[in-house]
Length: 305
Image 1: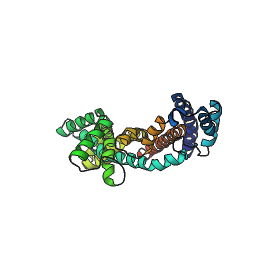
Image 2: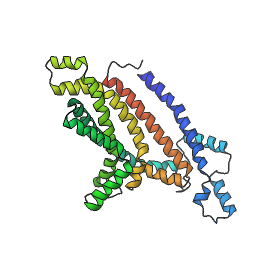
Image 3: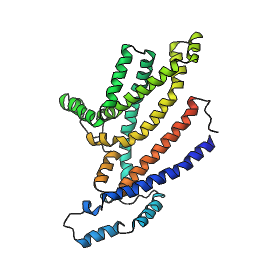
Image 4: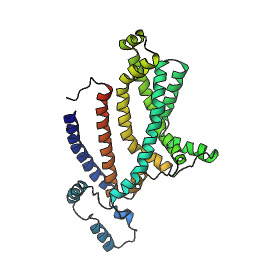
């Protein structure tokens, strides 16, 4: 396993370099940041001084080489809009984004997995139909629409929860639920499908013939063998979740990295955008590595040799 981990870590280098290349050049297709950050009546001398101070007057290939050199040391440059370290800005907001993403994933796991297991165990029952309808609605509702709707109902009409911001547990309820609703539906649907396949297997009938209780048969034998595809979905969705919090953070005024990314894109703040994309790409790669290693924990037959 050690050799597998080392090999996967070495493979992350080309992946992250590809992300850096694509991000660096695509963001610069948006135009010159001086057109956004400086007033329209700014003299040409002031514009030239601004570009020179930020290194924007240098050839593109030289800017790219300097960025790669500095990024290896964790230096992503200075924000063009906020005039402070881009890395510092991102890491200040990272805690809020991780808090929201972990809360949404926790909701998805606590509700989605049991719902999928129960629906598969009681196939074609009223419970199964209910779960399938809810999963259909959960994957059909856009997150921004559900967020606005939840604000209207729970924050404006009922006045049970705050409409936005971050601070207390009450501020976390609406954005986490909104973000996790789609995940609940997805995980429940995948869990149900995988459990249906496993419950038909011969070893499940053998376990029941031995007199094992249904809780042991379903929980230890069926769910454990059905969980590998579910774990794959969870790993992929958690990586995508970090990038997908953008809309939710905007709707609920959540001070996270997603909201910062939108502000940086509108301001053509190249260093901040590059730092955010590279950070999310790194987290996505590491999460997938952890998921691959957990396969062997769930199924000892899996070997990494």
